[in-house]
Picture 1: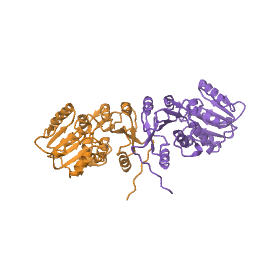
Picture 2: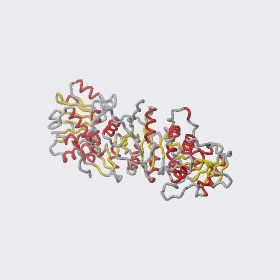
Picture 3: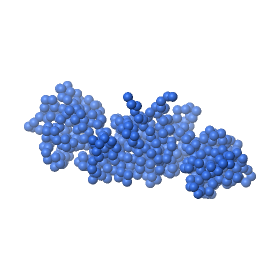
Picture 4: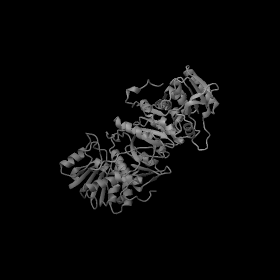
Length: 282
Length: 282
């Protein structure tokens, strides 16, 4: 067993705050600091609990905070962070939200949204196939749902069914995805002529004990995978019932736990060449 | 040898930024984080390099930054931090500057100025007596100089001679010290009728290679101590010449290195009962 390298913060250390409200529940901070230490990157991630009323001021201040290298962004600041960025990846622009910001040396802020990539990565680790299949996303018009819908299209879904109480936002998303991914059939609502192979809950339904199930398990294929993005509770009533019926499941922590490489890549701090830096966003 | 406890930052960790511009040169960050780890305090100090134009915004933001427990403040922000505080210790109010801020749970900011206390503590460690002696402070009207002058009075100086190019600020300081410390004789300028037992340079004279000496070594008692607050260079021309003449000396790092207990006490994080919390400032 090799000893873990320990963190050492000095005056030269670059800061990467993680911005949220509340913040105590975030899981990624120790893993990211362990990554910095292992890679001998003189950087630290620290939790910053900033209320919605203060986030614009903080994001403006980041431009002049010269030893800040960027920020991780979580609920409820992903949309405010999107508006504060000078440049955005296409992924972030489609979703209208960012979960990671790189601060350039000139102080400008470049946003990305890696939730969808991480979700599909977690599916791959769980052996849940996307390519050629019919998938459904409930809560598709929200931040996480839009990111996941887009990533599923990018991963080769044959047919994607989008469900959301906001019909207007759902229509806008469906139109954008259809334009960007002509090889994928985009539906609004449940399919009448097919069973669903993979169902994803990206809505908040399931956080409260008396919530109804956000997905009708009777309309899934036998052996269909059921995924949830909720982390409190990790085992939502949806996942409990799906598991009881024998469906493979994926919980919200699994998406959170594979974010690190995607966020580090956007920050320019990813060491593994298998995930090389992408072209500059615009 | 017991292993050092290592730092672990999670979502529950409280942040204590150290605010300065530049910030890379600060020496206290590793010592304070080691103190937090040793005391099992779930807190971290991180460097924040904020330019003068951004400091007001950051201090305002600290009120809503709910997992921030306070801030250490260094050059050039000590006066701006003073103006931002809701409450101040008498020490800070006399000096017009703060070097440590405690953030209360309601978001209010309470400032203190511990430079003088740390300076006198370092003198004690060096065996430089204050009580009953004649001392001189050059650059007395500045932030560090005022703090040191006040602390020397508090430590029982018999006579304190204040030197500063700003006659107006010097007069104000002398009047306040005379009112607060009736047992100490306060002079403006060098004494005509006595030799100086301890001479302190609290001015920036000595930071540049071609600066003149800020203190006339010929007017000191034999064996008088010579102290400097400058840290760049640590061995100023004044200290070099004083040491050459056989005077005991104290350099700027010695003051910086004993700040920790005083700053932790103000933050309510000092474990040693020998430095019990003081009464609330007003």
